[in-house]
Length: 360
Image (cartoon, rainbow, N blue to C red; front, side, top):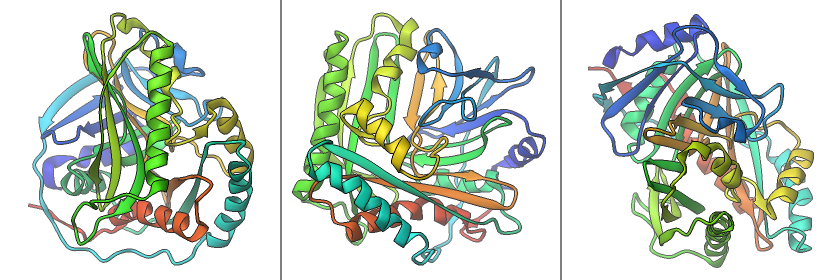
């Protein structure tokens, strides 16, 4: 296999806890392996205070879906050598789940239009057969080659199973006294491979709400960030609006408390925070598991890089489950929101094909 990552497939078969990831625009792979013992299981985000290791956290922590921390761990780096992409066809899943999505849309949109919520995020999943010959390690390599602007990871633990993602959304990154988070909201497909120049009111408002939330959450705890944006960025074949927040953090021993303050952002949940979170858990109709939680390396005395777990899939022995969602505002139209989830699913659908990559 290209890049000699075949050992990752062996780790999965052996049910070994590991993670491999590549940061946006970087050329290094970071490989984290639990050599001895079992990962740490946590029930609250604040319990991450003072911890170091690779974390994969669910949308909602529970006994069934705990926060999992790979530690103590060995962490190594190696250069990533991209191969060549083969132009694959757009993979269509037809209208699978469209009727069920429409029903959920009505349940979600009514309280939004009644102003009970400023925003709600409605997500869905699709499960499809895993084809013979599919290699998670090769899919990770393909993702690193194709989605250079995203955070790419492959993670497996006995508690979570195997997850692969290509996410554009940073939750928290930094070291020492300089830290960074972003607000990403609004989605458009690229126009003949080019970033769009204009955004409609729905997308602009959605971005404004996420930015307002992050600004408010930070300032409520005495953190006053500098801001840049919004500006348009590319993620795969999609464009988003992004704003950057940079701030100082004198006490890095309480990163868990800061993550608790930020997660879940309105980009994956809604506003008001607690009410939207509860509404989604009660009305979305399925368990998000680790989709729209967060993943990444946590190091209070080093460099942390944590990302929201979007554009991801859960890989099982015989199937894939892929996830996508979108923010609903009073102006939302069901057909457009459905299409946005279809567009987002393409990021992972591309990786389920076995012939999109040429090994060197």
